[in-house]
Length: 131
Image (spheres, rainbow, N blue to C red):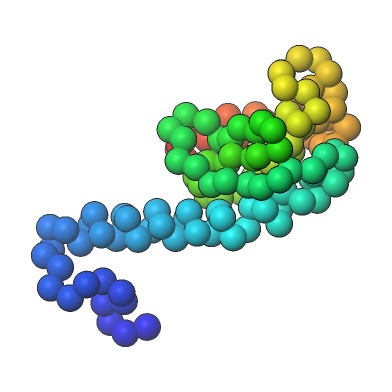
C-alpha cells in the first residue's frame, strides 16, 4: 500500500481523525455484510429455520432483530469474539420459531446452543464497550 493509503490528498490534519474513523466504520460494515450470512447458515440449519436475507444495520442499542425471515444485525457485532457472534445469530434465528423471550424460546435456543447462558453473560460484559 502506498504511503497515505486511500486518503484523499491534501486532507487537513484536523480532518484526518474523522476520515480514519469513517473508513474503519465502513470496513466493519462491509466485513459484517460479507461474513454474517455465511456464519448464520449453520445456525439456521441447526434450528431448522430459513431466513430470506440478512441486513446489516446501525442500531444504537440492539445487537439485532428478526422478523418475517429477515435478520437485521448490528455491524458492531463483528467486533466481538466469534462465539458471541454465534450467540447473537442463534438468538435472532430462534425468533423465527418463537417471537418472544418466553420459556419455549430459551429452551429452543438451549437445544441448539447448550452454553448460550455463558455466551449471553459474556456478551453482557463485553457488549457495552462495542455498542
